[in-house]
Amino acid sequence: MNTIIIEDEKPSARRLQRMLSSLGIEANTMLHSVEESIIWFQNNAHPDLIFLDIQLSDGLSFEIFEAIDIKSAVIFTTAYDEYALQAFKLNSIDYLLKPIDDDELAKAIKKYQERLPQKQAVTLDFNDIKKLLVNPIDRDYKKRFSVKVGQHLKLINIEDIECFYSENKGTYLYTNEGRSYLLDTTLELLENDLEPQTFFRISRKFFVNINAIKDMVSYTNSRLQIKLNTYNDDEVIVARERVKDFKAWLE
Image (tube, rainbow, N blue to C red; front, side):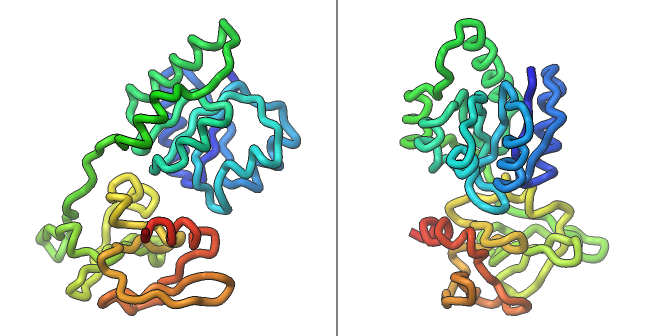
């Protein structure tokens, strides 16, 4: 089976690659953006199966289908369920919500393999779509974080965190008390731990808590500047490609 992974977060891509390898499937090609993917499809034979993240660094992966007539089967992987109906219109085998579960991944692979001999049209079952849209999968998100303070560990409740940010290759949380704490993780991995109705990744550098936003101001290049309750160490800017999704998230 010729398989590729399209995922902008490299740690997530490598994790999925390892999960597939444990199922006997090798995905040796990994792409990380809409632009890179379009160029790749223009110059390579299309694979049997694509594992496709929806939100890539330079846009939504649906843009790839607008530019290229892709015949490959697709298993979508994403942290959000609002794109399920749009994915349904494409060559979808399944729609896996992050963090991807081993059993769900195995079931998706089995679904693809069972349909292959009959050469049936590969479409996502409408009942699955309906479940995703009406009753999103319940997941346990982190309620608190443990941070190291000297020789001690301190617990910080999620509601006390204004934002998460990256700086000098480190990842930090910032509390409503005005203090930053270093975390042993990355923003990419945090995406699977944070409740998406409360936290939104506005850029490569920031996750913000909707309850900590006190003001929003128009900024250069069609971007937005966010003012948080106490955080003011750096400008908090919504990346231009995320502004539309950010506004939808606010509502």
